[in-house]
Length: 87
Image (cartoon, rainbow, N blue to C red; front, side):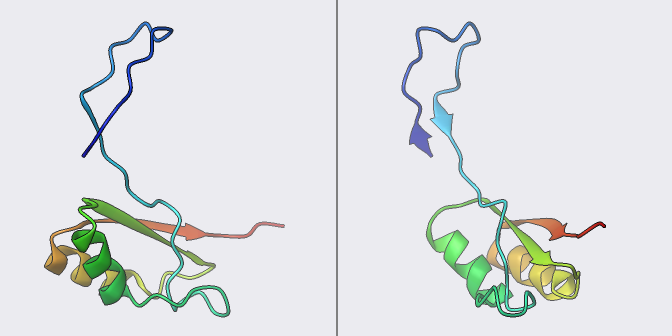
């Protein structure tokens, strides 16, 4: 957790801490775009103290089963996403 600087222009009080999580990550299931394996991604998030991490592979959902299992095993909240394309 990182302290949030105070903002005198903000009418809503800010919390004392700020948590960060990656919401746009590609794994090796995103051909030619991602290199991270799901186990390595979850393990590294835990090492960095990140409580949640997402995968948003290109046009497929093949990585979800292994990502979910690996994230839960590492104690990290998995967030499931995908970059779909429409025409």
